[in-house]
Image (tube, rainbow over all chains, first blue to last red; front, top):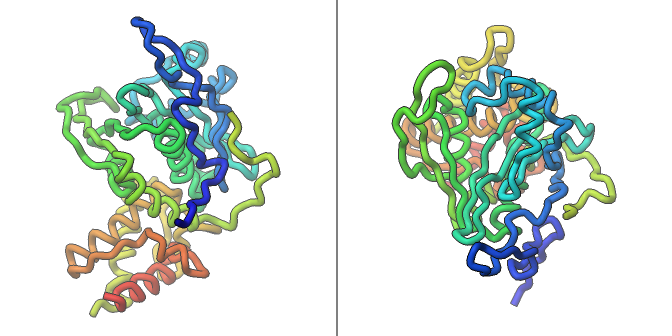
Length: 236
Length: 99
């Protein structure tokens, strides 16, 4: 039988190997976030969001591009406090260009639930759009997050909501395999008015059959990849 | 049989839809030579996905062609099919010949 070669970046960590913690009845439950230091692709890396990122991420959240995200902090200090308060059930990342190190956006995996094996990707924002023209930064960042969810944490489902007035994001999510699962009426007050939320979800089999080939083709469409530094592998 | 000029028109319409979302000072100049993705591109990967989706939908609804423009076949080409309007048109034509 032909053995499938699995790169270090893709190699799943067995659930039994993860750090465990006990629930209120003393049952052992794997920790949702054995800390992930960084996830590295060909064009971008995801590194943990830090309190020092508060001024930059606050600035991004004030942009017109962020108008269709949930209301964020109102001051840099609030943003710093919000970052400091992120729970262990979340993985919050800054997207950085691999070649220049420039932070270009943010992305999270929240509500990681290792009992029901699901999580919610979100807080997806490209804050420096001009810096990612012609570079598959958004696709690769999402690919790295999905690899974390499906390969490493061994989840079977990711899900989320998209504001109905954000057709670009909805189109993106559906093209990359998300299926529409429902609609929450007048769920968000965004950009000065109430909007429906479109519920979307992706199962692990759909991810492997649909999402992975599309992401691979889109990432290959980028410029010639910069040569990654020697140490550019996932570290945990 | 779909022609190159028909495919161009579909791609131009998809670029026009992207322009509708962009500021007047940030419009994409639309022609057969317009770079789509890679060096000189004005698109990020969210916009590239939007363009590919619009082209696939138009090929299907207007011409009955069910094509996937982002799969492993796209990887096999020496030049990315998403480099410019011209390369995307050539790729669509090639895929339709296999139908």
